[in-house]
Image 1 (cartoon, rainbow, N blue to C red):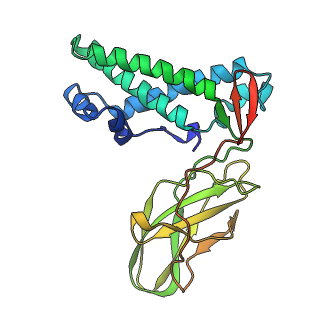
Image 2: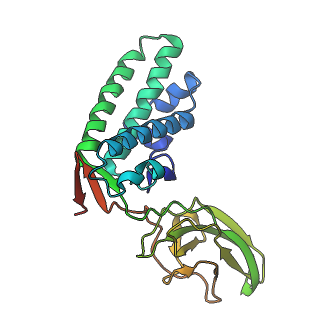
Image 3: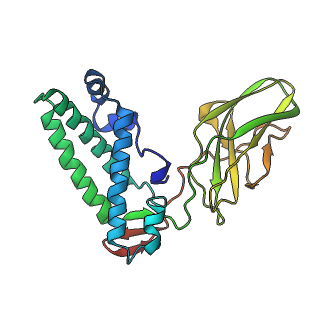
Length: 254
């Protein structure tokens, strides 16, 4: 998953670090979604500054200011940093809103943890991809005559790059296929670098499976065959880093 695809963590992820976070947010009327977004923005700016400071080793070099953080991968280290920084922001706001001393220790604790996580992230290296493939938007649906009864399908789709790089699959969507039809999926507005797309379908959110062992070419659509859903792999987590930039050194993956 790329940093520009969205927040590296959600509210449930924050509960792994702080089980009481939902209670605190509710009591202090703090919107966790907003704070997660703010943490993402702040971390993206910090990462961009790091990349600009190490332009000599950056594969995008002088083009960094134009692409920003579009090629930055969410590594484990960055994900942890984001979660701890988001918690720091939440407890900072809870403390400042009420000047309630019971929130100050948590604020200072997560501030320290977030700083350490930041250092670990840059020591490990910022993960970069050479051809970023952003997360897809949900597919559009239509139908053609077919043998199936009325059926609800759960679906995700993902863009693919020229060497098989697969971006983060779209958010889950559903389609109620009418009786006597087959669903047809279409993807529009491909990002730069995309050469095709994959389709994942299932009858429940937990049973999504790849239906396109051969990617669908740009401008084409996918129609579920009359044989029905195929068994296949579940959606992945998007692109892995091709290289890591750490302290002025460019490290190859593996």
